[in-house]
Structures are given as C-alpha cells and as structure tokens.
Length: 136
Image 1 (cartoon, rainbow, N blue to C red):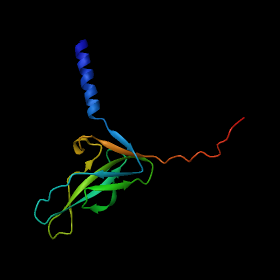
Image 2 (image 1 turned 90 degrees about the horizontal axis):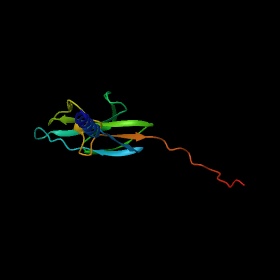
Image 3 (image 1 turned 45 degrees about the vertical axis):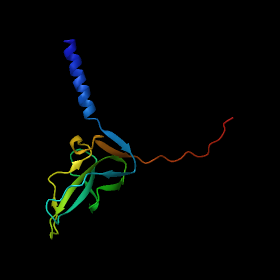
Image 4 (image 1 turned 180 degrees about the horizontal axis):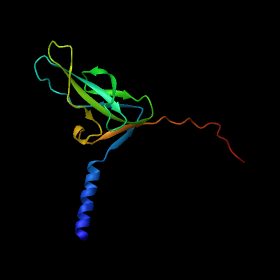
C-alpha cells in the first residue's frame, strides 16, 4: 500500500511539473513563433496576435496582421496576460484572409516551445522614496 501511495505521489508530481507555467514580469515583451508554410504558390501568410487575461476568452487583438514571426507587445494595464497567435492565409489574388481554425496560446503546452507554457504579468512600479534623513 505504501509503494502504491508513493507511486501515485510521484505521478501527480510529474503531472504538476508538466503543467507548470512560467510567468515573466514586464511592461513590454517580445514573443516569437514558427512560420507557417504557404499551402499554394502565391499565398501570403500573415499572423494576428492577441492577448487575454483568462484562459477561455477569444482575446483582444494586438495591432494589425503581420508577416513577421515575432512581435513586441506593450501592456496597457496591470494584470496577467496570455499571448495568442492566429494564422491568416491570403491565397494568390485574394483580399479576404482565411483564418486558422484555432489560435496558439501561450498557456497551452502543446502550442509552446520546449520551455513550456508562459504568461506575462505587468504591474506598475511604486513611486520612489524621498526625503531620507537621519533620526537622532
């Protein structure tokens, strides 16, 4: 029984480590992703970046679509943010984009690089202390 309990604790600890998420503290962060290959000759591939503060919303668009595979994001307000990226395909000669079925999110392990899931937290720094003095 003791061995079974220890084995279960080991499995639970490993699951916990696999689901661990790293939080970076910054008011601005650069994120990057792998390029998506065009499906046909002449396709243009663009990306739309999103942020969200929970794990279920569709997110808020950051800027406009880009052909770059990285973007620097500045956060407008204090909070914890997840980053999402959606692929948009423009077939040759078309002006309406076709969006990927899903977005890749920074809190989803399967969507992240080997470093694993992450989020960015931003907090405004407090004011500086002033008028230091000696107290007799």
